[in-house]
Image (cartoon, rainbow over all chains, first blue to last red; front, side):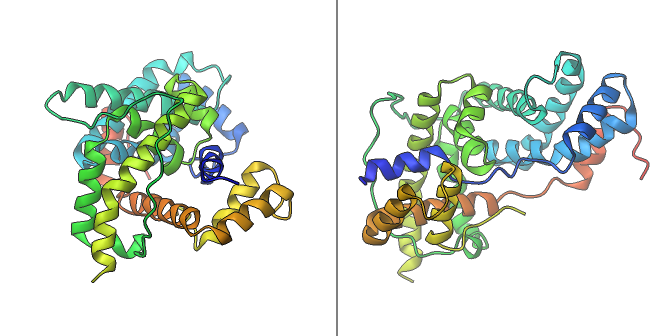
Length: 215
Length: 80
């Protein structure tokens, strides 16, 4: 097996889907139908079930609590406006991610002052992997504000189109096909962006991890 | 709570699970063999796991105040 094939494994499936919610599908369908009728208890149930997911996703894109709260609110207002258009053909969570992804992308594009690194989006051109060993435990690392700052700075440099793919796939744990449906990209384009985002973040953070490993 | 892989073996089992293969399948065996013999791939898998763990661990929970403001914006009374 070659390194490239191993990387393909990573493209395929790597993290479990943590976006799945506690509601059964039947419960969810009933609640959505009630919410469409304006039932406030049903709407509140949707808020309690999905606002934390939307907030976490938004935060992971913008890395700013206030903007994430704003994006969550805007997303829910859109959801309630468009709820009649939801026809159960896709999973509700997929539909939600589509709306919140679009909000986050719009928000990011409106911030024209930000400069993001340019990552070549050629699907057929996969960058070679730089291999460095990271010895640091991420749970311990995040306690260190300097590491969190470095992570935020690295994420901030990543173009939002790449960030959305990385967060949906690796952080939220959706399948490549779901990410493709949400972002309206081909599966090949999702894989390409994912790999570039991973490689970029990894290369940005490697010196920091190395530095702390040497301590 | 977000899942965090304890080690490369867990990662391998997970990859195999998502292939639809059991961990004794030919493909999983090949993957395990390669990772056990290839420090570069093992290091890559390990660092990706750490990157994802770090990214996830740095996200805060949805604040109660934000929930209250959201319900108000939606015109919903918060009767617990």
